[in-house]
Amino acid sequence: MLKKILTGAVLFSLVLIVACAGPTSTPPTQPPSGPIEAKWIEPQVAGNTVSIPVSEVEDNWNIHFKVGTPDGETTFMAYKYDGQIFIRANICPPCHSIGYSLKGNILVCDTCATTFAAETGDGIEGACVDYPKALVPYEIADGNIVMSEADLIAAYQDTLQPGLP
Image (cartoon, rainbow, N blue to C red):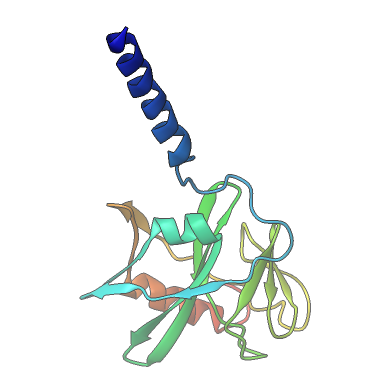
């Protein structure tokens, strides 16, 4: 009888532990509704390589980060759209904005409200529509998005000019 009571108590304890542990934390599969304002993060810089955690983009859907270059500070955005992560220059030259919100499939300039296609970076409507947001190539390694400083600078310079090369 004592053996049955102890076995029952152990099983009850295990069930209670599992129930109290709750669900594991996983990134949401659907973006939050409405515009998603960007969260600023600090990238890791090692030599000519810049990296940001994939988890920051997965958890926040839209982030911004700054990188110092010989010509000054440059800004970039990383966001999740349609199951993919995109890295783009984060500058709107005519209005001098360095912030974009993600609203569905649209990037919206936080200063002038010009809209850009999240998938291509192309301007859709607004005062700064002629300055598409250039894409930065990257690799994923050890849970990080890894970019070269040269690719970041090239995308930033491309975004400063009307149209893309």
